[in-house]
Image 1 (tube, rainbow, N blue to C red):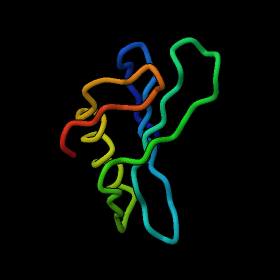
Image 2 (image 1 turned 90 degrees about the vertical axis):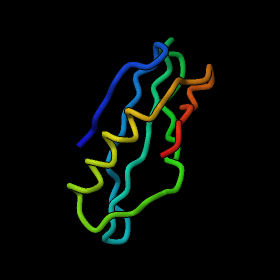
Image 3 (image 1 turned 180 degrees about the vertical axis):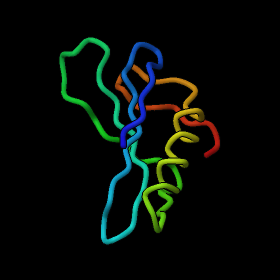
Length: 80
């Protein structure tokens, strides 16, 4: 499941990724001018979860904790 919101003109998405039977939330930003490909950024702390529901819940929390987006597309996180 992907959650999204617009921050500073960027389409910011938090997607649950599965690796080695564990789940984690990853943040993807899409440039506001559409001139480049989307980029993926790691969530600080890189927490892993045993199930997808927990990872999705954490993903919502991560989106709420983004205070802005740099011109490069890098999200600026508050304490996560």
